Image: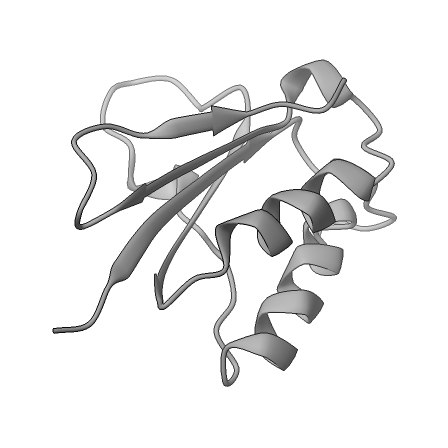
Length: 105
């Protein structure tokens, strides 16, 4: 049986980006994921939210098989987030009961 990790990432809107087609700081994590997990990357999902208002943060998700959690968290923590207080990485494998939340210091 494989182990799949559900990963959610929230950031300030366009954190570290120079244009709206670029996700800046998140691109660093996507580069890591593509190299380590056969092209896997975060997809932005904030446009899937219900309600009559726009989200006030960017939300990204990925499902990753056999995730090296420590390595991903280490990469996440080394990024110079434009607004670090708004960056959160949440990880829950199919073996866990709840998400673990990681925030830059």
